[in-house]
Length: 572
Ligand code: ATP
Ligand code: MG
Image (spheres, rainbow, N blue to C red):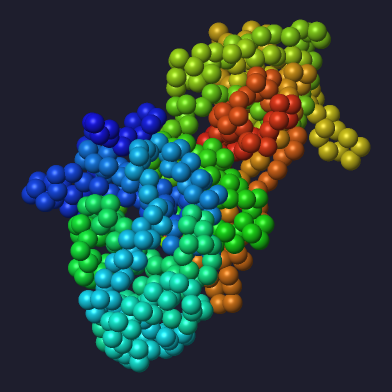
């Protein structure tokens, strides 16, 4: 059967004609050119102990992307060796997220737990070849004997047990005869190694917990370092790409494979993790935010999880583009979230239908507009995409504009509505201020304006210059909507760089969510579909949130139109 390529199931916008080169690509190209491999196999190995975040997306865009570009294949493997933290909910969410980003593992779905029998056999093999022993030290004693970077470790008193004794004890560990923490299986390497990972690392520990896939079959579970390299070898992975913190584990990865009759010896290659400014990116911390109810869930639109970003309105294309642009490096750094927003705006600008909504309404009565007249005005759906067509807007005597688009005493250079400035209502008419209506305290309540009937569509034949263009909705036709505006979840550039006595949670941004329960939008938005995205003119990009019902629409602001919004506002 012909093997299909792992290609994104949607369009292939991220598949560039000549992918940007990087050191990993270089290694792969060489391995193919030299004939070391005729086909490459990569893998993405998440632990199902939380939802995936944008950092994982970088990892799987890289792994699936490299496979795709070299006619290879990428496996999805759940690294499920830690039964307490893992759950099927996470397995399902991870598969949904990888698919959402457009990648396809075809029939190459694996679980490390599928290899438990084989891993166990290999462990007995290590015992019989004198490369592993059962140690009775408690975890605390193991740590004590480990030594430090400047002090060598001390051999465990159990290190020289005979093969027979080790085998017997290991089998009895498997049979459940011993309590947690009383025994472990350790590799016999070198307690004086300058690399702490090589000082007789634990390979198996006793854990009497149920596993989400193997149930109660096992009471001993293999450690990550032992499991990972063997899983890679069993699947015939050619290039095992992981993050920098595993660089010091590479000698152990290689040592284990060198001791065993495994079918192949994959090459581990490390690259720098993605860190994003103003956010945290560890599943443990994200779980803490969810459990502590600092956010509404894993899919809170402020979360850096893919579920959160999807709900917020991020597109797979924008995330893939971002992942391509940041490239692959060997040194850890923090990427500015503004780059991600840039990729997002570029994509949404092409796709999002335009609409008008007013978030802070100020009512205007157009005095010279006929009482009962309702006009239908033509508006383009997307100037970037003529195929998107046009729609009808309803215009009438009473409209809402944005409160901040009017100033009674404006500074110099103000082009929006003021006692002296005539402005254009987008797709409609020019209007001029006639009168300010105030309440008893003197606060502005509404405005009375006049319009120029000869400016229909937003232009006139004379040489009149009208610089400001405002968005608006017709009071009698607008629908009320709820709008949620977001800022970054943290106030610190790097919330992990804490001051003395502080915790990353101390940097949570109290203003990261602002709910506006009553805003007004043009009536066409009543028909907006779940997750449909719009550009609300001058306000940014918005998505229909999953909290919406048929009659009550909730919109999340995905991102504002520009970074330098305040600057351009003064000019508009
Ligand atoms: P976290 O520290 O966020 O909990 P993890 O490394 O424990 O993440 P895994 O499920 O083990 O999460 O990760 C699966 C894969 O994703 C691994 O290959 C890991 O190296 C990679 N990965 C995790 N975080 C990032 C990141 N921020 N940038 C790039 N790759 C990442
Ligand atoms: Mg991990």
